[in-house]
Image (tube, rainbow, N blue to C red; front, side, top):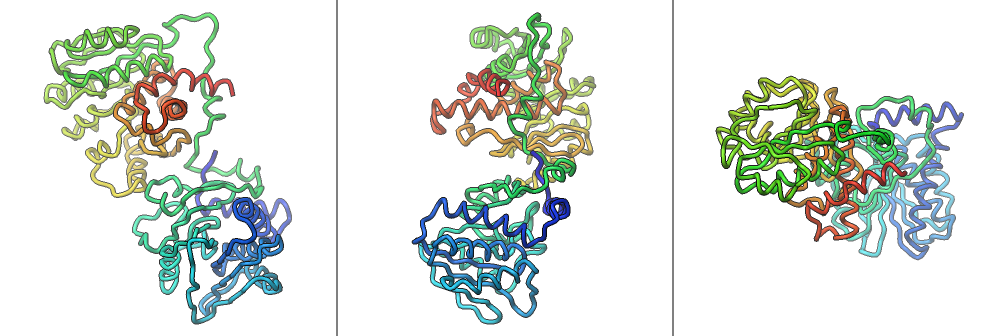
Length: 506
C-alpha cells in the first residue's frame, strides 16, 4: 500500500474532485460522514462532545461531524469555530458553519477575538478539527495555549485527519508541547508517514483509517517513495517450490557468527535461516562452537575458524550463494581484521548485522568496502555507532535514506514499524510484529531469515522486505501462544514456516 505525502494526497483529492465532478464541500461531507459514524459506533447520544474547529477544510470536517451527530440525536454538543480577523474561512468551512448555525440543539460559538476555554472533564470527548494536515508551519500565538489546555484536560481526544500541530511527514524541531495528544485519530484513506514513527505515537493514539473513496485510479497512478508492506504483496513476491527439486535448488548460505560465550546468536541465526527455506547453511565459528552448533542445529554444517574462541579468518573454501556476518561475532581486533580482509575481497552483496556493524564502526574506513546492495540490519544503538546520535526515528530514517543512496545499500531500520530503505532511497514500512519481539536474539533471527532468502536467489531488496515481514508475522503467531511477555526468540523461529505458509495460502 502506498504512503503519500500531504502534498501528494492533495493532488489525489483534486483528481477525485475532477473525475467525479464534485466539489470540496461534497468531499468534506463524505469524510465527515465516515468520521461521525465511527464516533457513533463508540459513544452513545448522552456523551458530551466539545468540538474545536479551525478555518480550513479540517474545521469544515469537524463542523460537519457536529451537525451529523446532532441530526442523529446527540444533544450535548458544543462547537467553537476559530475565525479571527487574520483568518479566512475556506468555502467548505463557511458552508458548514452556516448549516451548523441552523441546528437548535448545538451550542455554537464563533471565536473572533476573545476566547474562554470551556471546562472539560474525563467524561467528555473533544473533537480536534483545528488544522489537521492543512498546517504548513508550527503553531504559534494563542493556538499553542489552546492545544496545551486540551492536552492537559482529562477529556478523551479524537483528532480528525491528523492531530493539530503534527505534520504528515517530518516534525523535527517542532515543539511537541504544541501538538494535540489524541487518544484516537480518524484519518482518511491512507495513513501518513509520521504515524509510523515511535516519537509520534503519543500524539496519534489509536489510529483508524476511514475510506472516503478517493480515486483508485489516481492512487494507482501516483508515485511515492513510501510503501506499507502488506500480506498480499508478500504473497505475490514469494516463489512456490516446484515438486521436483533438491536442496541445491534453494541455495547455500555461509553464516559467520558466534564466539566464546555468544554462540547462542549463531544458533538462532542458523535455525532461522533453515526455517526460511535455504537449502544448505554452514556456520563459520571459532573451534569452541563445534559441539554447540552440531548439537543445537544438526541440519547445519560447521566450518571451524583457526582460532579457538574468536573468528580470525573468513576464507571461503567453496562457493556460497549468500554470506551473512555478525550475530554474536564480537569485536576482537583479530575479528575486525578478518572482516576487513573479507570486505575488501568481496564484490557480491552480503548481510551485515550486530557485531559486524560494530566492527565497522570501530574501523570506519571499512564502510567504503561494503559491496553495493549489501543488507545492513542495525538496531538503534548500532546505527548510532556507525552514523552518530539521533534523537528520533524520523532523523534515523533521513540519515538511512542518504546513506543507502550514496553507497547503494539496503538498510533495515529495526523498530516497531521496521523500515527497509533500498539503494534508491525508497522506504518500505513493515506492517507485522509486536512488542513481544523486543527480546534478546530477535535480531539474530531476522538476520537468519533475510540471509536465507538471499541465498535462495531473492534480490537484496526483496530479501529484506520479505524477511522483515515474515519475521514479524512469525512473531505475531508466537504471541498468540506465549503472549507478549512470555515470548523468546526461539518462539519466533518455531513459527517461521507457518508464517510463510499462511502468507502463501492467502
